[in-house]
Amino acid sequence: MSENNKKIEWIKWEDKYKIGYKRIDDQHKELINIINSLYDCIGYSSSEDKKLKEAFKNALKKTVDYVSYHFSYEEKIMTAIKYRKLLEHSSSHREFTQTIYDYVQSYENGSLEAVNNLVKYLRDWLLNHVLVSDKEFVGEVIDALKQLSQQNNNQ
Image 1 (spheres, helix red, strand yellow):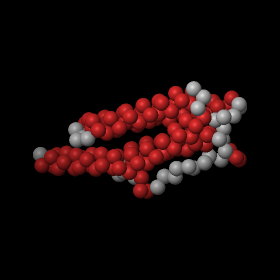
Image 2 (tube, rainbow, N blue to C red):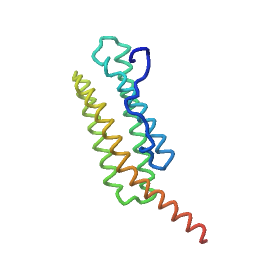
Image 3 (spheres, rainbow, N blue to C red):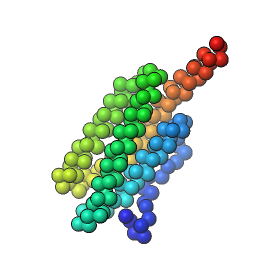
Image 4 (tube, helix red, strand yellow):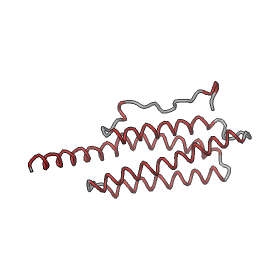
């Protein structure tokens, strides 16, 4: 970890990242925490200390696993509401996953630069995805819920 065992808050959650759907907002906060943990390990990725290398690998695995869980959750909601951009959105999830896999492969092949690039990519992609794609998607979720509520009130 960083000096004094303090975690570095590289990405700080801000209200502008809220998309208005609490469960997804909570997942995005967790993704930010995980990415911050990964960032916290960067300075030690070239170290010979096995504990530090193991911490980085664990943070990386947690990132990949949680992103997979999060995407699956979003896509289930999109399918349920017949989201008009489901294919486009899920395709961006697949591209993201492939890029992460490529960075992990580069890291495992000894590229320390891949680690820095991976963490920057995670930050930039997540924040852009949250601010643009997810806000649009959740807007349709809220509209679908309003329509369901109105239909139930009319019956």
